[in-house]
Image (tube, rainbow, N blue to C red; front, side, top):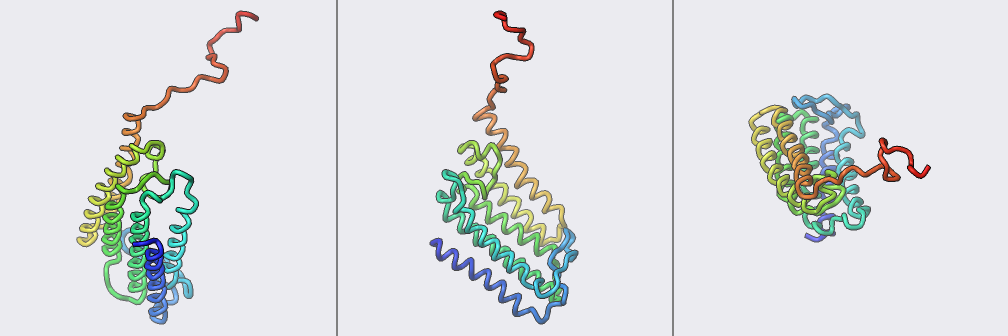
Length: 233
């Protein structure tokens, strides 16, 4: 899929979200639920006219941001090395936000379903998709597992993302199944710990093993605090 075609499909997803909001606008309450807690209960509301279009506007902002980031990447840290994967991740993120938009609007018009289960399952699917592409990311400052140690070493970046990709897939699959089964917020927290903290810790351990850390630099002038006065004085 070429960049122009990816952007066209991405724009289509944003417009579809806006069309859904416009089509259901008359059936939505004056205060549209736009935020849910971990128990799936609405705890945040946005009044019309912005409420129905909050998620489509967020999608549009996300698309703009994903277009800008490659253009401002420092030299040597761009997305050219994994352009196709970056484009597919862009589509996956926007598709996820479109699904969240649809769920939000359906909840607003009173369609009965478990928002908790739906959001957890959808997030799990997104993790699975991201994990499948993570091993193809090259070093950059915007997507992937960006720790000081992955950014400092190409080998650490590569190995960490190979591990991280597998963990994202496993965590996402677990979260998807747990969401469908109504497992509550615990699977979400467990998935985040597995998918985020383990690769971050691994990158530190791996960097220390492969690269090591330099000894502390001596104080300027090359003399320690306990050195006596100059003998020539």
